[in-house]
Amino acid sequence: MADFNIQFKIDGEMITQEQIHDMELSRYEKVFNEFGEKGIPLQMDGKQYSAEEAIELPLEEAKELLAQSKEAVGKQGMLDYYKDELLRADKMWEDIAAEADGQKPMKQAIVEVETDNISLIQFILFNQSLAKENNLYLPSKIHPEHYYFEAGKGGTQTIVETFGMYKDPSYLHLVPGRGVAKPITPDADTDMVMLGKTLLAHNMQDTKIIGMHQFKGKQNGLHVKLGVFLPQSAPDAILEGHKWHLMVEFNNGLHFASTKKPNWLQKLIVPIALKKAAKEFKK
Image (cartoon, rainbow, N blue to C red; front, side, top):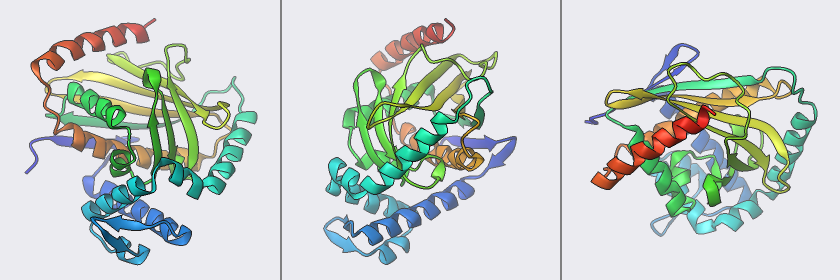
């Protein structure tokens, strides 16, 4: 039995682990069907699977199959298989950005997550492991609709994901930075903000997507408000879908984080870095 607890909330409604797993399984079915249609090999431990066989697997085996399959195809291979979808998604974000009105408040998708016995230090160590391993295997285990991942300098990431579970996978470049304007005022009890903008990876055009996550101190755990903000020109369906994407993604990420055991040096250094980051967001 797990010695930790993870609780998600959307718009005041508690979301159960069962609901999140049901959504996750439905997205695995979608991706397995895509692989079948495109003829992308599905393989695990030397055994080949059809899309139909893959869909019948329990969640943990489905995760392993898809992760191994993506890693075998490789990063460039995934971009090649999905090149048509990426072009369509580029056009969608270009249209959304062109119609955006910067004078209007942004639409928001906010998910609250609270943990017991999973600390912020553990979560940061997990994030660092993502960048260090820099493969397709681990991001795929976090969400089936992570098709590409490349960690860059300064905390940047280049990704392909079906943003908001809406239409085609998008090829995006995520850039953290103090210079990004906050779409909302942080809560008074927020200790640290992670803020960043999102560009189209192929030409670095601004998509007008802003990510803003608020981290709040809690005894023996953490409380986070995960936030994604889009212009009024974006369909509401993207916002609603991305709430579920965030829950699947962070639920798996937190389960991985629970296995991290910080050493004495990490326990010393990470809090100092967090205090510095907290000061930065207040500037």
